Image 1: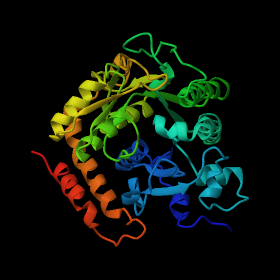
Image 2: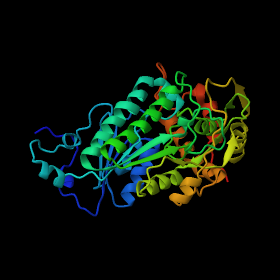
Image 3: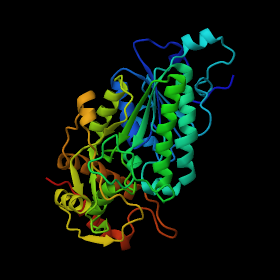
Image 4: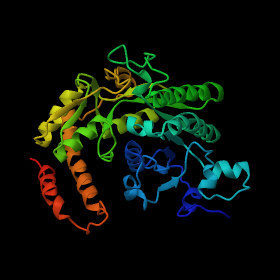
Length: 381
């Protein structure tokens, strides 16, 4: 019998009803890995599925030995035969199948989420929104699972209203450079609702606004990690346009709490999940410079195409129905994540291989630059 390497099938055949079984697609990503942590802490058996296209094994490394955690390297754009992926024997009866393998929840997060990533992988992003969502919904239908779709504030495009309510239909350029992500998520929402109406699949839809925290990639490309990394490296912070465009940043623990509350609710949504604390990007850059103590300046570059002018969620629906409200204020969140980004930069510097012709270790011609970098990466009070 074919069996995926490293998968322990015994823990699935001995499934305990008091441990809900949950599949998280995109579970090795920034947000997905934090969600895996939370679900395990709440007693779930977690199956994490990811191709590591934009996710990282390091995000789930601490979970790989957990008795209720399994990692599957699988692309959701291809059919998800979960029993085969987990190494179950073929040919069991339908009764054996339903009793020996149950999937209680399916959280679909698989997708590049930053403009840098989805513009690098435009077709795959669209396929994940279409085929990936279709395959995940088919799996939820087959197992009677509650299906949570991680949608996005990008479905609102460049909004003509502020703040954005769930009833707003959006202002999206369907052929712009950002459209591969915007339209993929809009289609995913439509497909999820179609499965609910036609097949009775239990659906939950979360529209996630800008989120930040530990495990974001330093090269993610979005404003928050860009500003923090540039400040710690002593480089000028790059602001696009005049910096008057606004965003709302939610700390990752708050966002995960909102997703878990939605998962356990009886409401389809959609629900805006984000921090309504709106801030211009120029002001964000200034706050990050202040918190890091960096002497870096600010440089201005042309605004990218279709960059939204305003982003602020109206979360009154989530506050009323889910009893959810973010707790971590932006400045506090920035102070929390600085040590993480500092460690990422130090690790990247240590792990960087020498150039051709250079000896390992610190090259003399770079010693002064590294000394300056160490100064910027120093702990701040």
